[in-house]
Length: 61
Image (cartoon, rainbow, N blue to C red; front, side, top):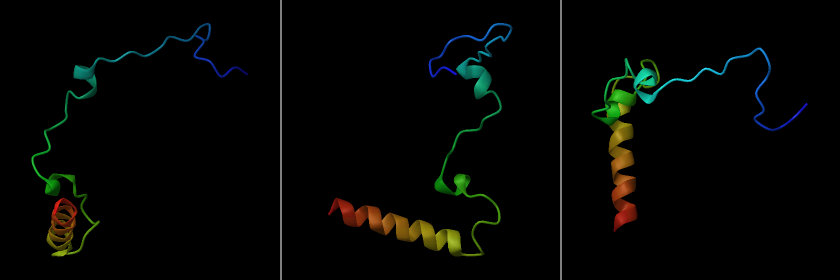
């Protein structure tokens, strides 16, 4: 077994461009776009984002 990046005979390496990888991606416009359904209960997301903002502002001061 080798730890290098040697090509394996008979196997083709899959190569994708950045455009292909992100073809169906949509831009993130806010932190709420990153929230997965079911992770936060009602109101918890707003509370989390407010707390996160306060922590970030505290680090700046």
